[in-house]
Image 1 (cartoon, helix red, strand yellow):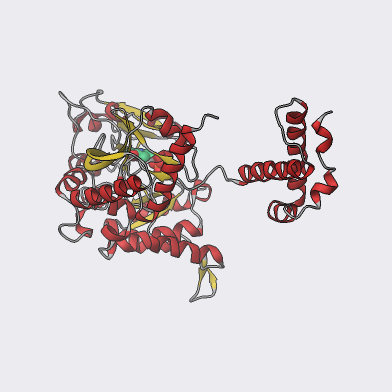
Image 2 (cartoon, rainbow, N blue to C red; image 1 turned 90 degrees about the vertical axis):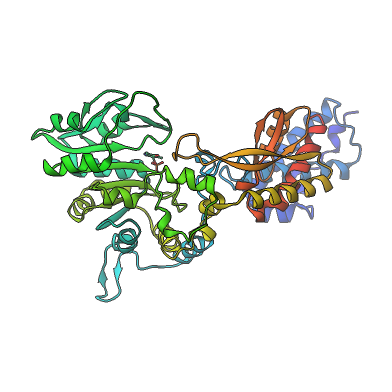
Length: 474
Ligand SMILES: *Cc1c(COP(=O)(O)O)cnc(C)c1O
């Protein structure tokens, strides 16, 4: 006799006490669809003899459990919070910069209600959204004016379109680079409507090469920070000061794509960064220095070293920024009220000298060797108490995200002992929350630099669950 006859009718299942809360949470339609699918699966298992359940109540319970599991899985958003245990501080695939508490609060306050986005509270009339960041960007970078766009690629496209569409932009052959994720400088140039005029060679370009290429068709010179590769050996690249001196004499603006958005050491109290981090950051071009050295427009990211929400910031000469703001593309790439609020709070943290404590990207870079070692030991002890075999070991964190190529900082790792590190790393990724770790030297490594202290409980739980899950073959 087939056990399939033990399956209650749908109406009976719908009336069970466990059904109400599920229908309430997921909606009656989704609940019914998931219930019918679960009935079909359980029926198939019973008919195939794979399921030995032999009472009507037990079959009903099994169906509702399968329904709940399916609904929970479907309700989990594809984009969700994850724990970055890789030690890559600006991890593009993991959403780049975690935001400062003050930025989050400002963003929530503006998102929850109406705001003065484009409203002038003095005149009671229409205001300009561009004014929100103007003074802060000017103070932070020394530029006369600034504007926020959706990301650096958008900002650079906009700047080139406004300043150079239909005319030539001169760029060194050594800077026709791909930054990653489809960002190729020649494509951005073409997309903006500007014409590419290459000068120099892959490894050496001189000021004279730029100067010789300037004609009445020239609209601008573009300089691109080689943020993800390094050229060594027989190379030459003029300093920004030299280049802008010549360009200014010939009346040609210099646009710099700087990427990282490092604001410089002036905004931090002495001793904020340990020597290794200081040395790495000293290699980053600071936006303020570029402006001082004569760049007419600088494009940089809001969510790399600035540690704010995703944005591309353009700062520079007032007349060029006015022309950029008036361009029709401006509307297509402008940011929303929430981003303004987050950028405002982030810039204020830098200007008040609080960024080393408050902006997570800066806080992570400022962690001392001792602090990292202590965090690693505490994490290892907690994992040990949870039955996870591990040890601490010296290792390296990476800054990542278009900063000095390959720059690393010393850290202390927690190494999880396992015979199959790839399988454990995969189990950690599938957990809730997903934990992204690095496999190195035959072990799964957790780097405390990028793990928030508030994430530690969830991390310990996730690691012990992943180990357990792996032990049970599925
Ligand atoms: C990262 C980077 C970009 C792209 O920035 P997005 O904000 O991701 O568009 C452009 N240029 C440089 C030099 C970069 O480092």
